[in-house]
Amino acid sequence: MWFIGIVLVLAGAGCLYAAVRQQRIVYAMMAAETLSVPELEQLRTISDELGARGGFRKLCEVVGATHPGPHGLLRSELTGTECVWHSHEVQRRYKHYQRDSEGRTTVSTRTETVAEHTSEAGFALHHDGRTIGVDHGGRRPDGAEKVADRFERSGTGTENGWRGTLGARARSGRDETIGYQYTEWVLRPGTQMYVLGEVHDVTGSLVIAPPADRKHPFVLSTRSEEQLTASGRTRQRRMAWSGAALIVLGLVLVVAGLVG
Image 1 (cartoon, rainbow, N blue to C red):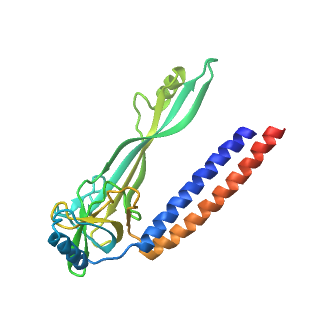
Image 2: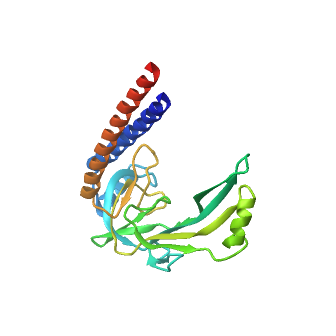
Image 3: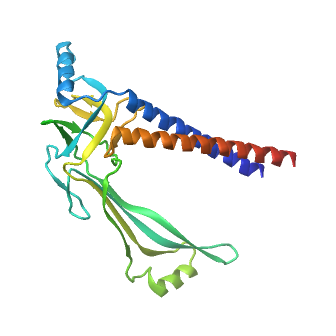
């Protein structure tokens, strides 16, 4: 019983850590300025005049509609959807047969990722006739549109069907593929976005990207700041209450186990 209590205490501590992290993200969004491209260009000009050309850095928020980057419109790899960003993953679902030392065979259903890819090219945000580049840093934007979500059963083959099943049961560690799950996300041109990050001019033009200092959050979302802060506060409260409850219950079980 005391072991279960320790597990619950650790789980509760994890929830409290996640609650604190969520609170920091909400505070960062509330504290950051929302700046337009002309305002950022003006700040960059001042930085250049002070002798820091190419070294401009500004933590802020930027909003706008997605727009193709220098590479133009992209096409997603699974569905061929025109977009400015895309990502996909392919997961294999399979039956795993494992025989123990006494000759008994257990069967479990497992999933493994066999392929995943995110477009490398950046895109831009367009607002009031001006654009700013976006470096997504390989991250999937919150609220990206899911354009593929299908499961395809595997056809017959050496590891499938009744022959494959019998062979899997006969040998320890043999797998039998059930099928593959295909999932794909995209950002279409014109999607309204909110980005909290660090604007820089390393490549010459202004780009908002994940902050160099990782303690600062990077938020890339199709939701507004108001929606994000509201949901963030709700999530933070739930995690905090869940963490506190798990810790209390865990301590009770630990004490009960030690006393008993």
